[in-house]
Length: 226
Image 1 (tube, rainbow, N blue to C red):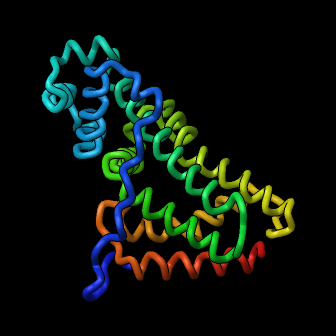
Image 2 (image 1 turned 45 degrees about the vertical axis):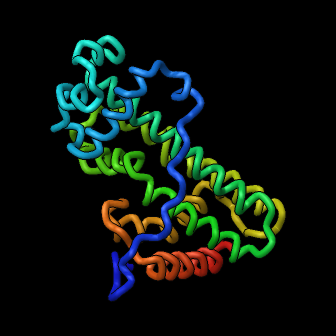
């Protein structure tokens, strides 16, 4: 897949922005302003270049207010990374429940889930911009922050998908011995190509390219596990 092809380079329809997690809705207004600003600044400038001064200016608060709420830049980044990971993971889990809870046509339902997941993640704005920052600057981000983000985000989604695949295997719809491996291979076949082609959502991908790549990946997955 390549981002954009002749005359068809518009991005797929953007889904609704993931709703804030329940915990974030209960945060004091000033703390919410800081986390929103931090997500924007970290996503735009990266972890290393982003400064507390820039985040304070974006949020319309003082640096001292940020330090009072979060302690330091590393703790602020971790807080924002976990919050955005939780929100996006919740969106993906909802899509999996919608498409995979009750199977009508296995290939069609797997395809619908994979397309909706790719759209949701690759058009998630600041939510996924932070993921791009983490991937690009992994060597500069504290290891405990990386591990926490992975567990709350990509690995949590893979665990949820593995649970769905295990249930489908119990129903005789898939032939799977290792549901975790199957979930990993499903993601490689139906999402990773689009993520690479769009530089993890930084540039648009034509709807036709997205769907064709996912359709081919689903067929390959079913040759393995169908």
